[in-house]
Amino acid sequence: MYSRRFLPRLAGAVAIALWGSAPSVNAQSGPSPVPEQHEHEAAQAADEQAGHDMGSMAREGSGTSWLPDETPMYALHRDANGWTLMGHGNAFLQYLDENGARGTSQTGSINWVMGMASRSAGGGRLTLRAMGSLEPWTIRGCGYPDLLASGEVCKGAAIHDRQHPHDLFMELAADYDRPVARGIRVQLYAAPVGEPALGPVAFMHRLSAMPNPLAAITHHWFDATHIAYGVATGGLYGDRWKAEASLFNGREPDEKRTNFDFAALDSWSARVSLKPAKRWSLQVSGGHLTAAETGDAGGPRVDVNRVTASAIYHRMLGDAGVWASTIGWGRNTEVGGESTNALLSETSLTLRDRDVWFGRSEWSQKTSHDLDVPLHGVFTVGKLQGGYTRYITVGRGLKAGLGATVSAGIVAGALRAAYGGRVNAGVGVFMTVRPAAMVMAAGTAATGRTMVMVQTAFDPSKLSCSPPIEPGNAARTTYQGKTYYFCSVEDRDKFLTDPAMSLSMMPPKQ
Image (cartoon, rainbow, N blue to C red; front, top):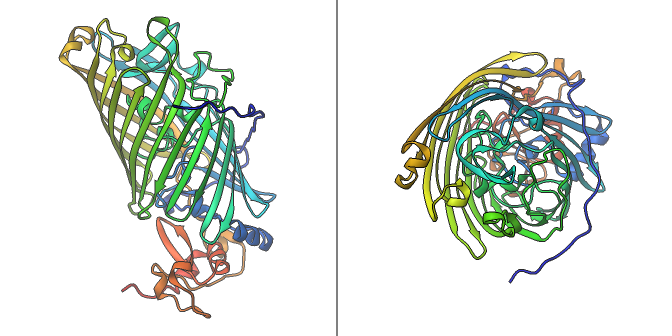
């Protein structure tokens, strides 16, 4: 039995405008998840106490979820008055055409923008985030064509074969973490609009899905709670693990996309994340979503139990290249009703931050209510999709691209009449714009500081430190997709001001 628990309504909003005066970045030198420079010694000391650098920020996905450490950051970045400011975003102008009896076509814009502001506070790190979308005005009707997609309600009926527009407010959140014991930190996340600890990184923030304009048709089995109107999360984490739990409002947003759909925080979830290596991020999660789905024929809303498991893999490939893949399994059980499963596999290959290939394969069980068909039962559907985008550099640290996608929606024999065939094709063409891969402006010419050299190594056991240190206690950071170890946090911070000089002191690899 699930007990209802109520917390006071979370209130307030954080608006962060970051783009205006952000410095340009050079995407030809390869991505790097470390800061361009540390401005002051006081800021270095604060960062040391907080235990954060851009290497740890690179692993942060949506909400409190984790990406692999080997993750390029597509963002605009600057430092101002003790704050680290970052801007993320992705926008498409697309034409989509899905064939078959339920297919349709549409021109519109899928888009989102996100701002972050982070600083040391109270012996830890405070991060404020705001994320929004113009899709309430750039996606017409009940959503854009996406054959076999399902979830949420429009005009009194379940949305099917379309992906609903995102809300104007996608996230307004405050995140705070600080050390509580040697190698252990506590994280607290509160959001009037945010994401609970349930499922993998949301598809907009997964590198394997970022170049793809279409949402996965299994979205509501994995990461559909990425917009929840009321979330409180607490967790503990170390370098390779995180355990967390959330109370949240599990009801889906209504079809009015510009308001706040607050309700009781009577849903719960828990998630365990593991990082067995810098290229991997694994998670297992489960939760109970109170009144999450609309009932059949106007009946009462339905509670849903959701369980997910996923693995994300990233591998850097030369200058500004990355191979990113995600696999996952999700299961929804309607309390008193059906249980359905879904499988997802998606990948993207980026070369020189210019040529991007992407693909996705999905298998899902969906009910007659999900698909709005005059039948009863659970039906198996699937979708295959692939595409390509060519990017060019435009403006200050931005990339624009032109791409195309093709897909095939596959249905069970019982659905042939409803869909006009067992296999139905889809095509799309699009223009897109996003930040370039963020890189380090290394060297004294870029930083304007005196040259510094510190000892660093890929293997902490090869450091010659005085006094000696245990390899497991070595400070570290990630630069251009590789992890470097240091004799002290002070050496790590010096490395961040001039990596090129420090790398010349690395001991030979064995």
